[in-house]
Image (cartoon, rainbow, N blue to C red):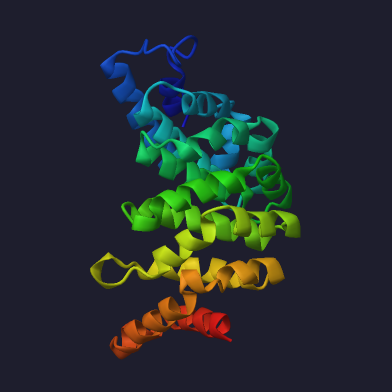
Amino acid sequence: MQHTLNTIGTNFSGAFGDMSLTKDEVAAKEEALKDLSQLVDSIDNALALISMGGYPYVIALVKSSYPSLVQRALDVLAITTQNNPDCQNYCLQEKVMEIVLPLLNAQENRTVQTKALYFMSSLIRHHEVATAEFIKSDGISSLVNVISEQRSLNDVRLATKAVFLLNIVMETAEIPQEIISTTAKDTALVPSLIAIAGVQGEASNAQLRELVLCVLTRLRNAGADSEQVLYDPKLNLKQVLENIQSEISALDADDRDAQLESLEYIEALLR
């Protein structure tokens, strides 16, 4: 791993933000980050990234002017922090969340945006302090923006990452009722979620739809204010849910069984 870190750290000083790397140097760092992402899939190697002093190089590359390096660096950070409290704590200590949060809305590069969502999910999952910091930093607003952009499903992968992260936030932390109510009432979140859930035919995505239904169920259970927004007649939630039920019922047995959880969410929402 040391050789890989040496390649990543070459020309470290002054190389970020000023387009000073040659094409070959960028390619070498891309390959090194790709190799590193495979190495740190082992929890021991992920921890070694701290002890060997490699983390600062990877974190610095998140601020690089080269999107290809940013996305690969985010991939490494996401893998190391997944179910790894030591690496989660290290990234919190180094304030990596502050660096990555703006990238959640990096519309000019969807891959960077998707990798930023991936890292943030790994950073906060099962980590109450990180989740609280995400909420305090207004990360929910960033998620609402991403989800609202994706209501037409022009990027299923990006929408899935965003809704997955929102689910993690809602399951990990006790979000203040005021935040939930304000988010539900004053943003495009609920209409966007219902629009995504209502996509049918070839454009629909079972995994994304299940995640959306889970969030809608959590919102329903969050209190009267959120429930009132959900069941606004103009949003036509009941019809959307009944359409999904009909679509799933028409599937063959195996495909239908794979979507039983979605049906359970629908039943809860229709009560």
